[in-house]
Image: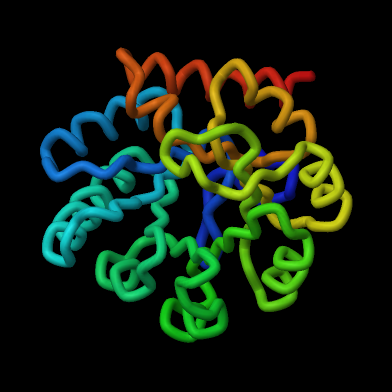
Amino acid sequence: MMSRNGMSQKPGINQIPAIEGLYAVTPDCTGTADLLRRTRQVLSGGARVLQYRNKSADAVLRLTQAAALRELTREFAVTFIVNDDINLAAQVDADGVHLGATDGELQAARAMLGKSKIIGVSCYNRLALAREAVADGADYVAFGAFFPSTVKPGAVTADVELLRQARTEFTVPLVAIGGITVQNAATLIDAGADALAVISAVFDAADSQAAAQDFSRLFIQDSAS
């Protein structure tokens, strides 16, 4: 099965795993057991990508949690990305790393991680950044915030038209982020998003598995239409 960007859902040898569907991003969580429990629910609900992001943990806890999540994502055959930290991604043999504006150069990450790993880049609301990232070899680019976010209330905003324009320019997967809910997600998928990066709407839900299933169904409906 192929995604709209032509990437295979189930990677073979030397094939980059897909970036598509529900792209779940972990919340700051000091309790590793609780994080794994909640993440298992989200993966059971159909998340296709998991990004480990923890801005409050120290290096020891980050390594412990990332290693545990790496094993969990292998169990579910889900793509595992580490936020910001190239060294940590290499330590736990993550599928890749996601870089923000101040998280290091893409080419340095490629040199450390190798050609087979995924490198995603935050491009906020700037197509120029995406063009530069793709030219430098980014495997996917992320835009947002598209809606008000409780995780990053001061984030720059992006409009849906930006996503539509990006879809006409780029063949790499496009990830939308920022305040995404089941109620507003369809607009982003229709505009060309291959994946939706979500934290609160799944991890803070009363039933994280059901919330993840609701997001996953949106992509099934999109591919069927």
